[in-house]
Length: 257
Image (cartoon, rainbow, N blue to C red; front, side, top):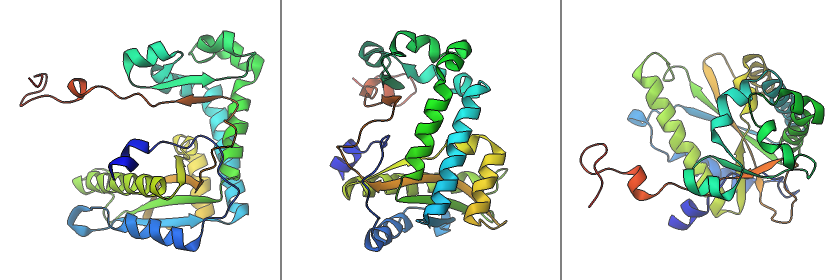
């Protein structure tokens, strides 16, 4: 278990061109079903997507969402604070993502591109389209998507039951990440459509999510292939904050002696 936790990472690259077996899908669902939930309510339901047409459509939605988020500035406004451009920056902050993989012609402009003021450079070098194309391809070539829906009987945003449902879903997601790691699989959030309501509604329609459920998360999954090339623009995020930066003794701010 410790090994799986320490080796767990988001898979930013494409997966092996291999269908996920029924046996492995059943293992994933069984392990997820053993995640804790408030009063054993089990508020989650899972949609396993292997139909290529549906995956292609969701890939197109994800790619278009990435372009839209970048072009209208939301992407930079929300996430610029997490961007790092050197190992030194990563070592200093011990958080965020190190954007270490760029086309050579973009490297001199990296800090300018990934800034709120980088609109002209983004437009000139078609950065949003590069990232959008990568996003679409990564999703569309995935052998499987794994969607999580929460029942609205429990997921009530204005009540504590909604909060407990999200905690339970977090446990499900961590379980899935550790199990995929243990099985030689990888997973990654398909997050960009979730930031644009109309795009998310398109995915809800494709997956046939009923009105009494809330589509909460979608992941791409597959078997890891270490020989696959990285996307055109990519990053790493292996650093973690030290013990004394994360944990306090008895009261917030008190260091362990």
